[in-house]
Image 1 (spheres, helix red, strand yellow):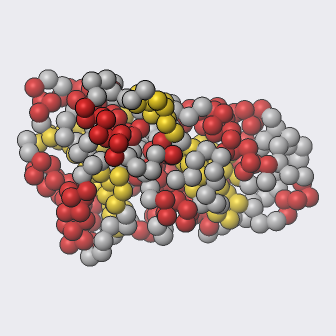
Image 2: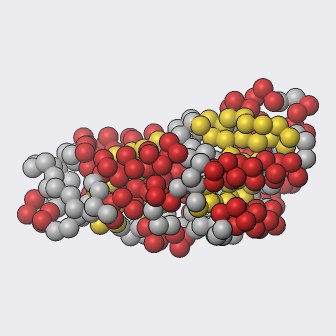
Image 3: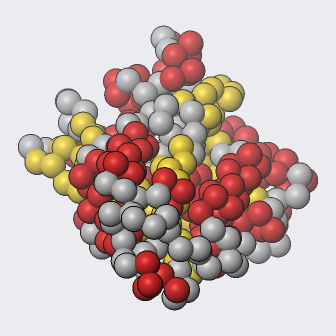
Length: 323
């Protein structure tokens, strides 16, 4: 993944010249070239690197503190040691959002070369990441940047959810959309998105303080297999008693989404490659094609949900565009 200050590329779209007198950006006469709308997201999308690079998505990293040290999540290419530590640790790792300075490290070079930004992030209901992005935008506006050149989007979802929103916005920009239209395309996709996921236990969510609407299930129900979603915060969907039933509930969800017009599907997991592979087979039976990607969720989210997560969604490809 591209980290803060390591832009993966950009998506080109025609943009008008900025408001005269802006303090940041190239001289007005240099903005006659074809302008870009750059996509920015954060490391909790967990989209495969090849997809990130293909769409030119800049990734700002969150942080995780574990086993006595702090890592930028975007620099952690092997999640195995972290999850091994998580399973034996008596104290949960802690996570932290990027600073507005981390965002400025990414935003400023984009603005200075004359390009615009759509920045799409993990739900503000479970992380302050989007607020840091908003603070960075406010700083640049104070410095004279036209506010219309940067739009920050609270996805109200997470992981593949806001990553797919960034892809939809990137595809829109590639087709000629400006900032507002590209952001609107991301929000349109969000309106059609229904991600659900199964976790082995609510214990990690409880201990990490991210349990949200599933709080009512705390108690003896820690032994159930919860089915959850994210709609600003963690939301309970259903309780089942076995892993097999949880898997079947996810398959039913894919069947429902296929019946509603979804023709492509996606899988994410935490330390559950065999279950993800089985889901890929069942999904291919439903959709007649393999998943667009299967990817593993990393430490920042994993610290709060624990190993064993399996999540799925499906979408109409006409809303997303090429992956």
